[in-house]
Length: 108
Image 1 (cartoon, rainbow, N blue to C red):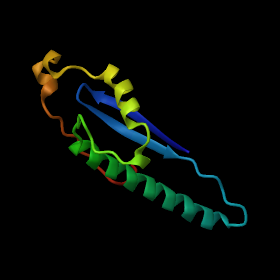
Image 2 (cartoon, helix red, strand yellow; image 1 turned 90 degrees about the vertical axis):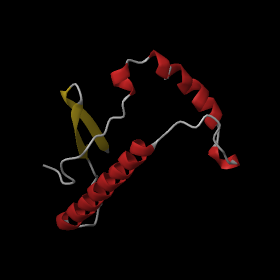
Image 3 (cartoon, helix red, strand yellow; image 1 turned 120 degrees about the horizontal axis):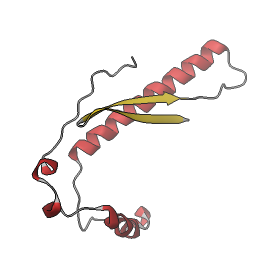
């Protein structure tokens, strides 16, 4: 189980805290279970940072190329349209690109 918590620090930043709950695997020692849990935590953290890299470079494509296996992406995109704001309606300071940096790759 993975729990993410975004804790606001000020109007422009937040601290991301996360916790991972991993069931013990029957038949393994406590040390082996700890190793499995640590490996899972490490992999979850790496996957999160990969997501951040994608978010930093993500742009909307109005007519994406899709394959048969992509499923009902267009229906989902139509549903999401209700949450988009027209860029022309935004205040200038909200149109600026924001960059977020992590302070540590390790838990503190």
